[in-house]
Image (cartoon, rainbow, N blue to C red; front, side, top):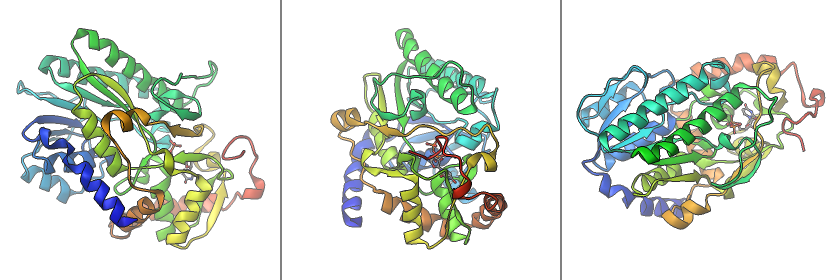
Length: 367
Ligand code: UDP
């Protein structure tokens, strides 16, 4: 299994040779996906400008220093405060964004302006420099559960209002504006990643795998929300980066779903995989008790990434087992483990006040 992964990953690694020497602006470059993108592009010999306000940075001081030593310009500021020099860029990868079900909760009412303004600013910069813009959107834009392809309809009940919806619709609006700017000379690619996970993902936004892994490594119970029957298709960040690199080099503007459908699991099954590799107890909890009544659960989102597989030859190769293993290894050796364990321990005290028997089967992880 591991051998197969390595071989296929190596086959994917040659695709961005053409990016050598290209000047590439990466917003959100110190974040989870961004830091993997930066590492990959540096390996390919690109010249990078990284813009990141470092609020959810996962890049260590050592990593940032190694990027600087490799000639990367690092601007530690938000996209709105970033002043671009007159020097041209060839590509802009716009990743900077509020992320995660908990990340959005803290910014409700301010999510839309941040997403739209930063995306518009990057689109205008791309037009000015005749650069290609790669906008990293989200699978949340569909609003509905199901197996979703690029043309699937988006649907939001008119009366629903949640932080998650503000996030999803802002990303959708940003996609629309970017596509419409195509007629004003913008060359773009829009990518909707589905449940990306793996090493360097922070639990800060509330993402499930780093939470489960930190809980298991720290002897805390794993907090499965609801009955754990909700499902997601998890895609390893390494596979996503290879997809992004292939998409970046497309000349015709387009929209792409990126996700590994064959990694579909229920959250209960994901918890069982973590426990199998790092024994721990599983606890079923109501997320609204942990995070407040405005916590919103998304429907089951399953990617149909046939277009990327067909037109790009993109072939995700990391399964859930190997992704869990890599994430465990990352956190086992991470000096931030105790910091996050202390935060999750406080939660687990609240969690213990609820139990599976007390959960109201009202849609959170129930059938
Ligand atoms: N989840 C869970 N326990 C946690 C964190 C998340 O059971 O401690 C569940 C969550 O309810 C969701 C799934 O894991 O069904 C994926 O959550 P994540 O926030 O990673 O992604 P999203 O819900 O945005 O797809």
